[in-house]
Image (cartoon, rainbow, N blue to C red; front, side, top):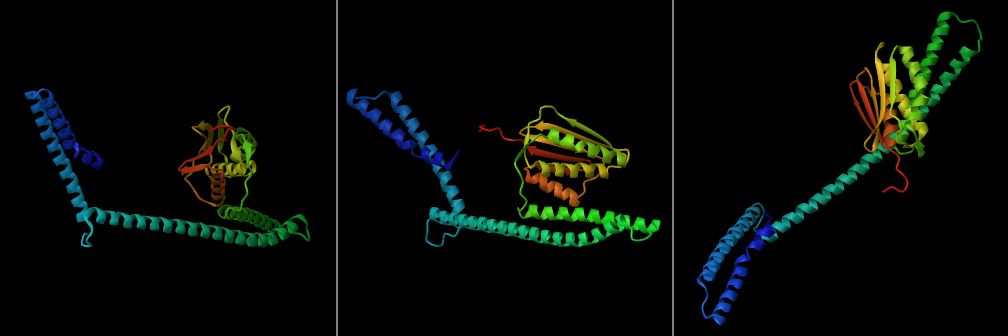
Length: 315
């Protein structure tokens, strides 16, 4: 029972007393005698309400005393004023704590943007340095200035391949930095995931055949569209699928299932490798989250849920 209800019950004896006096006055004025049953009922009601009022008033008084015992009442204030002072002080402390939390969050966001900008700058510098390495390697391999033996050609080809891989990772780092500082602009296209998967399927199948992994794709019919940057979303899904196929042991299977799930679109990739975090997967997750998706990773499974496009005119 709430305290306000208990306090309301405290006035019950007064209400019953007024009704009792009115009833007795009526009988005394017009009948000059009141029925015994009326007097007995009035007495029982008055005593019962008195007991109830006493119990509830005592309960409220005890609770106030218990609260007052936990605060400083030496200031001359009564119990309720002292309790109100403590509540106001704690409310002010909570507001201050919330303000500090917001300031700390803003500072953290600022640091993330600064780190993203620094990451982008470093990635740009490294990319320029790699370009100075890649170009001579390309010239040496494509334009012969003299005879190279087989080992020299193999070493140059290995160096060029490694430089291309590093260049790709550095470019992805730069995009991650742009995502962190909010500098990557995404378009708002109406995208059908079935069309995206149809575009990705040849590349995924080719990669699976190269590493000896079977790829299975199951796309539910009549899926609702999603909204986002088609190019970026396709890049993110391509990175996720390529990573799953590449890390699955030879002879294994990668199963991709796409279906509607509540108010979203569920993309589940079952593969044969433990979860891993590298530049490619970090960029893929950042791009997916920038599209409002939730990404869950576990051993042998990646689940992506994309929000579906809103219908114009819907509430």
